[in-house]
Image (cartoon, rainbow, N blue to C red):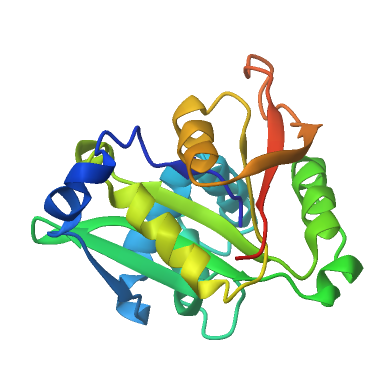
Length: 212
């Protein structure tokens, strides 16, 4: 899965933390959440996830990219699927998601199958042993009220004293700001492969946070 975040700018301050975020509830995702997970993972990746899923549509695996995403998120034992996902709810609806897992040594044996994923895979291989946040996304109409920060704090807690790492786009200023305010520093970056001829050029930025 592609890391990165569409978390929006967190406008709550320390003095108002409890008031601003008391209505946000986090819960472990279930298999029934697969559709929401696919949508939010696609939002977090700026549409990169659905671009990847398009290949499976062309191969006849699914009828639409989002159907393929839903199937991937509903897999029982796949890394980055529903078992690794935490959902945030606010105002009676699903508001956002964070998907995280430990980066095991086995990632060193994985090879990218398409050029677009090579830079991100190479960056991930440099942080084996860390807790990796593969996706962190919040629906646009619910951004700016602390949901992204709550999800991020929860992922840091789940890291259980391990370093935490993630990858986001160099032009995603809101995500870079959120991570920077929460102790993440840029560790490396790699040029992203353009998906289309008119795609805006950017880099993938690996950010890390020291073990708690």
